[in-house]
Each structure stands twice: as C-alpha cells, then as structure tokens.
Amino acid sequence: MRYVSFKEYVKAILKTAEYRKDSEMGCVVAIAPQLPGCMTQEDNFEDARESLIDAIELWITAGLKDGEDMPVVNGINLMILILNQIVIPKRLLITNYQMPMR
Image 1 (cartoon, helix red, strand yellow):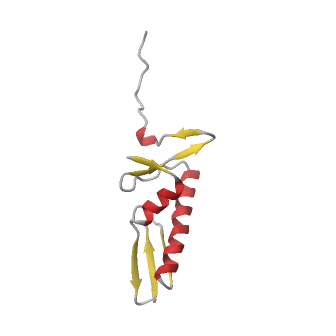
Image 2 (cartoon, rainbow, N blue to C red; image 1 turned 180 degrees about the vertical axis):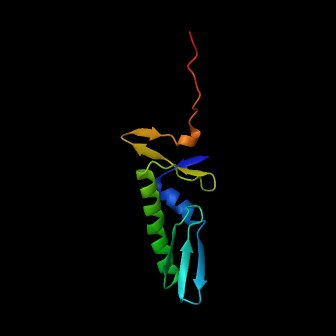
Image 3 (cartoon, helix red, strand yellow; image 1 turned 90 degrees about the vertical axis):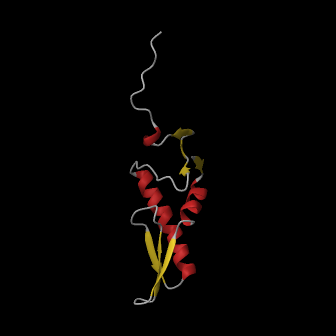
C-alpha cells in the first residue's frame, strides 16, 4: 500500500470513475464507485467530470471531519497530516499490542 497526498488520492479515485449518458434525462451521470453515494450529473462529460472532482473532495473532507477511514483505492491510501503528525488509519493499528516487560 502506498500513501499519497490529497491531490494524488483524488486523482486515483477519479481514474476509477464511471460515466453514463442518461438518454431519458439528457444528462451525464458521473459516479465514484470507491466512495459510496459519491455521484453527480451534468449536461456533458466535461462538466460531469469537473463536478465529480468537487463531489470527491467534499466526500473525503466530510469523512475526515467525522473521523472516518478513507478507502484504499488500487493500493493507494490517503496520507493524513495533522499538526506535523502522521495519523495512521484505524484499520492499520495493532489494538492488542502489549509492551514487553523488562
């Protein structure tokens, strides 16, 4: 697993995006399947992609604010720095570790 910056993480998610032309409504639906519920729609593919970038950034920001772990996307994880400290995702913590006795 590789840790990357916010910008690189968004790019990795964008590479997994799916775009569908909705012929009934005449719009393009853009979905980030790695992020549940993260989708948008616009009149054309270019606008749908730009809106999806905004939606991805908002999805990540809201999740981080709520203390959520971000999903690993194609072996890439978001590096989180808070006040010069690296925050390790909960799923990587060893919870039953005990210091050896001396």
